[in-house]
Figure (tube, one colour):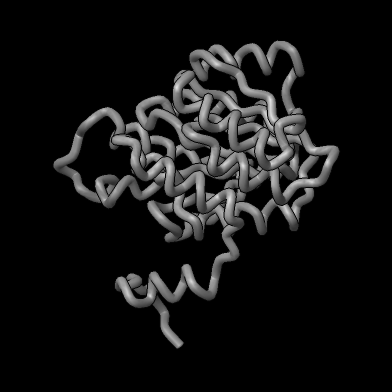
Length: 221
């Protein structure tokens, strides 16, 4: 037994991958293709993808919103785990990355579940609020520009159904959130979101040390 969360060394991390994940060949292919991109660090890890699939299996959401598509690994994970009647809306600005995502959604046969919105994420969020009236998504995954996290959060909360779950990625931000000398905009944005979540009594939260830190926030009201 231990009272603190340990840090995985290379050997134990490999053990986690070997015995804790079942990564489909298409997901592995996408991850390996993305690894050659200069911005590959933006892709979630396979163990996080496995965890997100488990959440989808457990929650059986009918509507999912993703802010930050990149090359589509996380949306593909959720699409593969979801039921046929689930709809996923994913938002990104980059047409090159999302072309890769579209190719893999199609190859996996889940492209009919996924709707891509290209453009500024805040504009897409505002449009969704206007068109749906809010409280329209069972599950929301936020993994976009960190400086805008505090701006996205209240609007995404409006889009989340009561009892729905929001996942926020990179809440550790490579440890920079705990470094008081780091005052960069992305770090400040993640810090502020973490504070907002902690102080929001309408959200039940659990920050877990998965990959670069992942917060689960359930809207209780």
